[in-house]
Image (cartoon, rainbow, N blue to C red; front, side):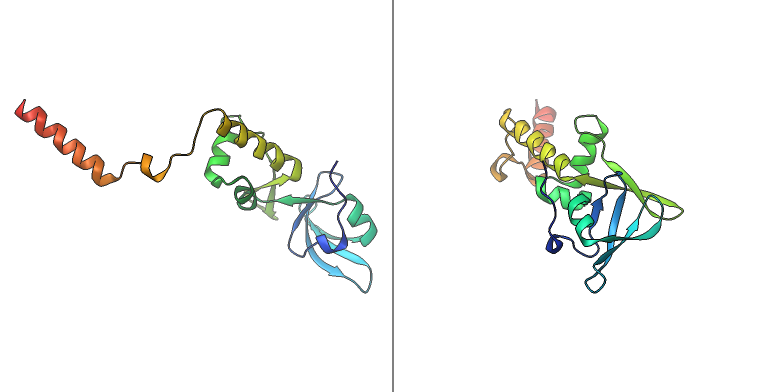
Length: 154
């Protein structure tokens, strides 16, 4: 089970999941009134949530660039594995009121599953190539030139 948030964990401009599954962005933390003002991307409206409720029901959400740092993979790699079905498709929200590109959002559980997935791929004998294992473009060109020369002389 995920731990409940503390008021210190709730940050302005961060994304959170509500129990309904809707994604909200914190616009303002109002300590005077004891409310957090959020923008709900489902209804495209601003709403207020009291501190106690917010801390007990909101779950942090992350965008793909944040996730890529956690799992130490490029965003394009994550998208590739999602597109071929090896990773679950994330929830997507539209940031703009009238459409726009969908925005991927991930829960802490989804990130943990992704970390496990990539760790298992690494342990399954897929080592990361070291700098010594890679061939530079000039080395490839030299090898091709030498093969062509051998073919012409041979």
